[in-house]
Length: 518
Image 1 (cartoon, rainbow, N blue to C red):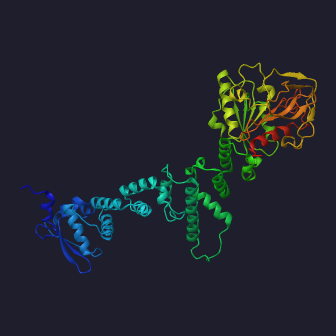
Image 2 (spheres, rainbow, N blue to C red; image 1 turned 60 degrees about the vertical axis):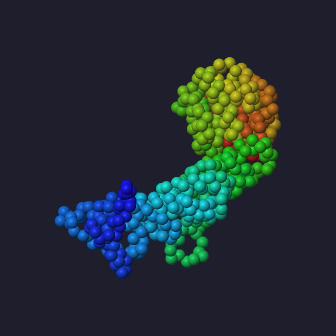
Image 3 (cartoon, one colour; image 1 turned 180 degrees about the vertical axis):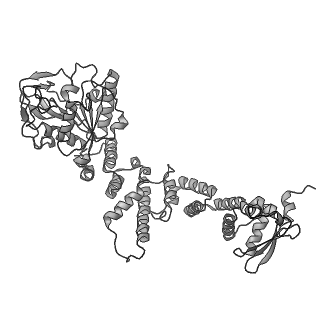
C-alpha cells in the first residue's frame, strides 16, 4: 500500500535512530532528537547552523548537541512535528502565538504562513486594527493584506473612535489613508488623523524632555508647527471635495490646510449648491490672503526685457504685491492647470499668436474665473476688435467681461471724471488720474450687467467690474493705456506718472486676487 511521505517522515520525529542532532530543551534540558538535513531544508536558520561557514567536514557523522533554554519543551516538540510532517492541528490561540514567534526565531516561512492563515480566519471588525498593527510590526504580509482589505470594506465598523490609530506607526497610517474608497465620512477620517498627529506630537515632546516636569505646557506655536510638519505627507490624502460647508468650517479652524485651498473648495461648493454668500461669511476673513502672499500672473505680448512689460509689473508691485510672473502669450500658451497656481491674472495683449490659441486662452480664462479667481484686463490692447489674433472664446462668448470689443479710438478728454463708486476698494487712495495728451480707449458705455466704478471726463468707462455669478471671480477692465510717462514720455496716451495710475492698477489686482466672499 502507498504511504504518503508525511507518514514516513513522522516516524523520524524525536527519534534517536538516524538522528545527528541532540537538543537539550528548557530548564530541565529535556532530550529531543533531530536530523540536520530535514531541519536545514525547512529553515535557513538551521541550514546556516549546520552547513554554514562554521560547519566543518570533520563534523560529518557526528551528533551535534544544541541547548535551547528559552523554549518550552512541549512547544518545541510541536515545532519538530510540524517541521517533519507539515501537520499542525492547533486551535489554541495562545499556542499559535508562541509558534508564530518561534517561526520568526527560526526563520521558518512555512510555520509563519500557517500562523498567518490561522489569524486571517480570526479576523473581525473588532480585532482588525490589532491584527493589522501586529502584521505590520512583524512583516506578516499575507495577514496584513487581508486586514487592509477588511478595513477598506468595513471602515465605518473598524475605525470606531478618533483614538483608534493613536499607537500606529506613521508608515502604516499613511498606508491606511492611501487605500482610497474608505467607507467613512471624510471629516471623521480627518479627525482621526488629527488625533493621531496630536498623539505623535505629545510623544515627541515626552521623548525630547523625559525628565520635564509634568503639567508644564509646550509653547502652542511650536506644538502646532510640529503638528503641521508631522501631518504634511498625510493631508493631501484627505478629500476636501467630499466635505460640506460645516465640515470645511471645521477644517478651516485647524489651520492645517492652506487658506486658499479651503477657500477654493468653498467657492466650488457654493457654486454647485447656489447658496447665499452670507452663510459663508466665516470663511471670508479667516482665509483672506495678504498682498505680499498673493501670486499674480501677467500675460503679455512682449517679453520680460521690454520696457513696457517691466513698467506694468512695476505698477502691479507698487503696492504690497511682490510675486508676479510673466508669460509671453505670442511665444507660449498657458495651460489651465498652470493658471491655477495663481490668485489672479493680468492680461495685456494684442497678439495671442494663432486664432486657435486666442480661443483656447479665452476658454481657460473663463474656467479660471469660475473658480473664484480674478482677472484684470487692459482694454485698449485686449478688447481691440480689429485684431484677428486677439483673445476670444468663452471669456467673451459667455459675457464674463464687462465691456464688449470695439475699435479703440482717441479722445481729447484725458482726465478722471465721475467716480460712481467712490468707496470701492479699487478707488482707495485714488485722487487724480490724467494722461499726457489724450485718452486712447475702447469707446463703449455697455457694461453687460457689470458696474462702472469710474469714468473718463467724457463719460466713457475708465474702470469697470463684472462678477457674472456670485461665486465666480471678478473681472476688472481698465480702459486706459497701462504705461506711464515715466516709461515713455513721447507717447501722448501715457498717463502722467505723478497721478494715481499705479494705485489703480495695484488696487485692481489686489482686489480681484483676494477672492472676497461678500
